[in-house]
Length: 147
Image (cartoon, rainbow, N blue to C red; front, side, top):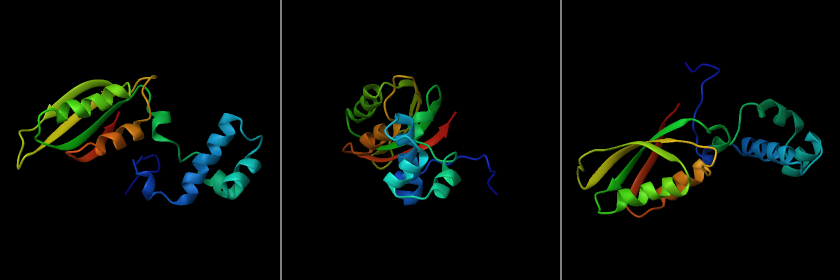
């Protein structure tokens, strides 16, 4: 049984549309592009009750990650330079690499475990992971822990 205070990392495509619209409405309010909750919910197409029901429970991952350590696994082909390409993505997004562990490749696929520190200057973590996944030879990127 999951506790009320538990957290999950869920891909955007798995979320119900109403939750994504709550995030959008919150962004409109925080940026000052709207003057009221009613104006925000009208603009994104949800009810005020939906907004208030979920507003404290949904937030963009990158907004709350600063100062934390993120550990993820990556499965990559055993190809020269591929680890460097993955690490370059992390560097391009401004995260601090804390640890890297690579297994001996089995079936020409290596498993990596990478821990990074998310800094104030770090870019959008979701976009960073997506960019890693799009690299030729990268099979899987999964977040293991957020501390």
